Amino acid sequence: KNHSISYHSYQLIHMMSSRLGRGASRSHSGGSSFRTWFCLVVAGGFIALNVLWISMFSSNFQPKSKLTMVVPMSKPAGLDSVLQQQKSALANEVAEGSRSLLERSSTSPSAGKVSGSSSKGPVEAKCLSKECLPEVAEQDYVSHYNDPHGNDRPMASMGLFPPHNLTVKIYVYQSDEVGAIKELTSGQKMTLTICTIGMWGTQTVLHKFLEKSSVRTLDPAQADFFFVPAYAKCASDREKKNDQQMNQAYIKLVQSLPYFRRSGGRDHIFVFPSGRGATVFRDWKQHIGQSIFLSPEGHFTDNYAAQAPYFHTHKDIAIPGRLDNRKDGLVAAAKPQKTRTTLGIFYGTHQGKETRRTLLELGKRYPSLVKASCERTPKYFEYMGDSQFCFAPRGQSSWTLRFYESFFAGCIPVILADSIELPFQDVIDYSKVTIKWPMTKVDETLLEYLKSVPLEDRERMAAAGKAIRCMFVYNSDVSSCNALSAIMWQLEKRKRVFQQSHEVFWLHSGEMVDRSLDNMGAWRGPFNTNNVFNAEPTQKCNPTCHEGGPNLCLATENGIVCKGLKAGAAKC
Image 1 (spheres, rainbow, N blue to C red):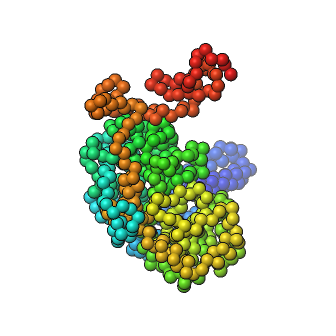
Image 2: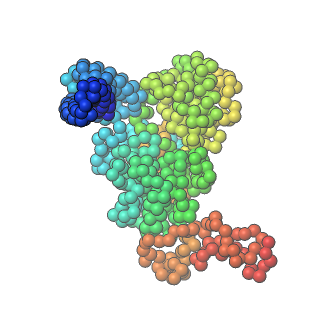
Image 3: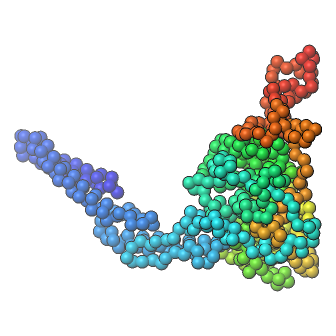
């Protein structure tokens, strides 16, 4: 605006000086001198006027809040009335957007209200982002985030696990013991509350619940497993750590763990709460390749498929994503199967996936059968509760929160992810509570099949799903039916009487020593964890090695050497 004022002032000065100058030149022989002085006087006057104008303009438009909007206008007349109109329009837009957000929010109805429009000043809207949520004190964390849906029945009553109590013991590393933990659990933009919110909240919930759990031991000599706190998703997203920074932070952490070397990390537990899994730690194969990963993703996410597989069923545990408080809304809106009017539902973006595109297209072609849209809706819980089946298609990765939502909405999950790895498959028969359908057959054939499922079968499956859904929520009480308890039972089955690695040796007395025959209790970090489990390196062998066959290499204490080949062997 200031540039515009200055430009018009320049045009006016130029026009007047040109006209007056031409008139003066006809009347005086010294017209040129007269014109020069006249222009200077007029220009000085307009410059002074321009400065005064800008000063008045700036004072009238000092923003009083973040929501005040400055609208360019062609003239100063009526500025106050126009500005007030803009304020009112913006206030209405903010209030409407906030209402829409609150209707689909999983938080309480009173959270994040926006004040109404006022003619006395700009509208003040309460912040609705994660940063504005009140921080839960650490001493209140467990009571605040304990999920009541995971504390309503004893695990023993499920009949899925042995009748005896858990005997597994977990040692939880502390930041005062291992300082490198701080870089991955705290920061300027990382708080417990922020890192707990949403489906990736397992990174903090598991840590804090284990600290208060009866399975925790403070004696590392009694521990069956060692839990390593690290909020991978939060450090990456909130602190904006790039892959290199995350990699260095994890290497520093692992090399500082005092009990890691005795088992090569086999008894150490890491949580990776997103579809990226362990790839958030770029060199995970070289450092923690034999450790136990807890992750909702048992396959891979598309952007990191080149690093797959990074989940191994013989050692890793698939865990449920965290549902937050949306369960309450889903349960409240759930109807009996016999009164549901919609065949199936899918709300979400297609993410470039053919399966999701097809579901959205089926929703357009058969709106009376399928509710499908990529737009958010405040009636999501209502639609879920009125659907007989709920589609859970693969997105960027196989796991999706819709799968877990379905059990609380009372609809039967239809899994459309061929390579999905489901949690607790050793005790849950998913053929009794879900349907898994080929991704290549998502068309009218699927709809016809779902329509053919009898009501009594749908009611039976929905009831069975309701009975086991407590295993998909998190509670610190390991005697009740919840995800933490189920994870502990998984670890119970994996306990080892004996731990060893390629760095550990033992004597007739049972003393555990290292390669120098020093007692392993004397080990002090930092340790070198590169290729801690003798992983085959990806780089080629030293070119001086003779190749009598495949160019295989082995990582040893003396570096990379040719595997099983003699120096005198013939070259390829």
